Length: 180
Image (cartoon, rainbow, N blue to C red; front, side):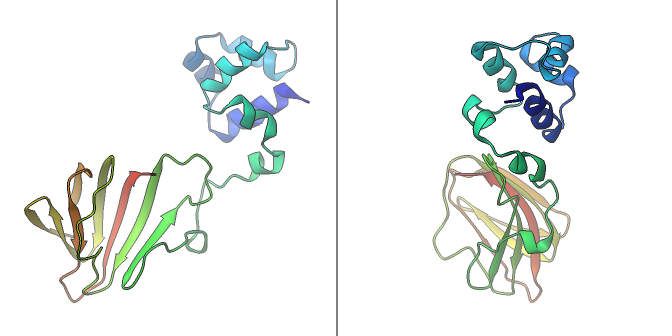
């Protein structure tokens, strides 16, 4: 197996320079260069250290198909965003096929009268977003907020919360929260 070539491909796919990867793991960039050129064969522990800066596990490094490495999406067209919502609420998940996602980035579309449900939501982490168009009623705990185009929000999502469109227009929000 071409360990050096694979390392270089994955490093570039993640948008890292040799210098940045070297800095992250505390080695010289010439060390990264020599590994990528197959001038040195790193020990398993050295390779694990280098891979921790990407980050990717040693198992994924050796088992990931080259086609997967080369074709991992960076840009997502509307047809690449599955709608994970229900009823009058569309939740388009951006980056759905990204492996190891640590956050859910959503384009939320609330039809007039749409809501996240009659029960308050609660989940680990934090949540934030920006109203792109329309208006939305946000309830966090006992506080009720009216957000308009351009308004943003950010809160600990362990607190009970819900969203509701009480206007006659569609409301669009771009939001992020932890992938649970």
